[in-house]
Length: 455
Image (cartoon, rainbow, N blue to C red; front, top):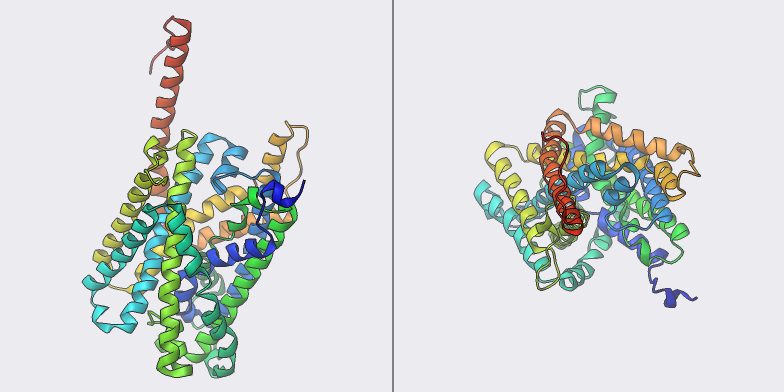
């Protein structure tokens, strides 16, 4: 049977584009300012985190090769560890998505403030941040087709201008900006740990090629190749882009920049270059918001269809989208923006906390999936085959754990509280499910069936 007969239309180029398109987002645009205090160490950490991200990507590729499952990390965790673990991972992954929306929106607002200083006061910036979040929600509420078309328009807008900065910009760097390896004043381990979540946030989405596994030609070969290739392209862009921005913008200015790439382009090519990069960031930020907003409705919908999330998350609008779940998720993102707008005076503090929270809740699913391969293989073979954990999977797990450690006490605390708040939801869903099954048995048998003892 031919590929067209199988209906599998995604090849290596398409899958690689999916990985690169989903990874290169706001974590890349704002990161040079966030990592600037750490000097040359930041560049080294970008490369190390890229290697770790490739190991994580390969673990997802292995899982996708064994069982193409809808729901990504949630589906694999549920298959490997059971319903409760699957629920917690779906809950955490969902939190990671809606808590990342403010970070992407902040990137958009930062550029708008740079272009139009009148937006620089806190109230206006907050309104702008919330406005772009809800505008994209409205686009997604119009249906998957509208969201997909919007994504196609914005996906590649980011690559050409940022590729130009990362490559051509190498001719403009001032090597004196790289005189200090680690000027932060912290130990090497402390600095590495602090950089881990800032850089890992940019690698979120590395599992993207596994999502459409059922539509990929020769998935067992294409997904690993596209994953490694996509992460490698993104890592090269991250490293070279950071080198250029740090080499062009003085560190004293860079640490306080809200639009580091635009500022670097302005110093290299004047106002025209700055404007071009700013427009690219605006378009790309909107595109990233669109992609994650679409996913924000799909993940809880998959869990709700399995009976692990409240049924309202599975309800579809007349346009075929999980509208209620999307609006609920966007409301939580709105609350996060408002809490941080009221409680913090520092742009850097807001950015770091949101990145830490989003990364922490995403890395927990990554850690579960890193070691899920052997359990999934065992389940698929009915226990007849139990392969060992590979070195790559072990590295991926340790990489995820170190990133979790580096997220910091405050994001981990908030993240754990949010994860634990999901337990009552799970208990409620299981209780309702058990009652429904019990009533079904009673109806079929005609006799009441009750537990031997009540709690």
